[in-house]
Amino acid sequence: MRTWIDIACLAQTKNINGGLVARSAAGLPFLLSEGMKVALVPPVLDAPRSVTVESLQMRGSHEAVVFFEEVPDANTAEMLVGCHCLVRRVEVAEELAELEFDLPSWEGWQVFDEAAGFVGEVLDIEDRPLQPLLIVAREGAEDALIPLVEEFIVGLDEDACRLDMRLPAGLLEM
Image (tube, rainbow, N blue to C red; front, side, top):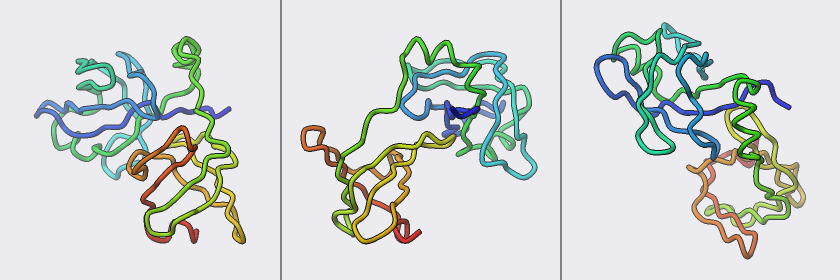
């Protein structure tokens, strides 16, 4: 099991006092809490790489305005937009156990790309700190590793176990 888990993404700045809008990640409920120590990835030059949640104001069940002790102003906050908040899995183990959180089973699903057509069949899903990766068996080629992120998914049919995606150019050649 991985030591770190991605629990939120810093989506945008909110105010001149360094507030950031944080959204829950990877299908999780919002897990940031006051006093929590967070590692930020990817690291940004001249910005904090780890922060402590000072306070937060919930805006629905999956989003909050978050203030970090090490982020004093809007300029610093702006540098952190797009960063993901990683915490040690043990810090949220109780919450995850209550949710009985597990990645959905995608094994056997067929993956299609808008440009390439049929890509292959999902063999497994690998839990990674930033996002899960689909391991897709491709006929006549090496298995493809495809990030399972909302930005790539254009449709899914649960009854047919079909996942339609818009993959970045060159991803399947990696």
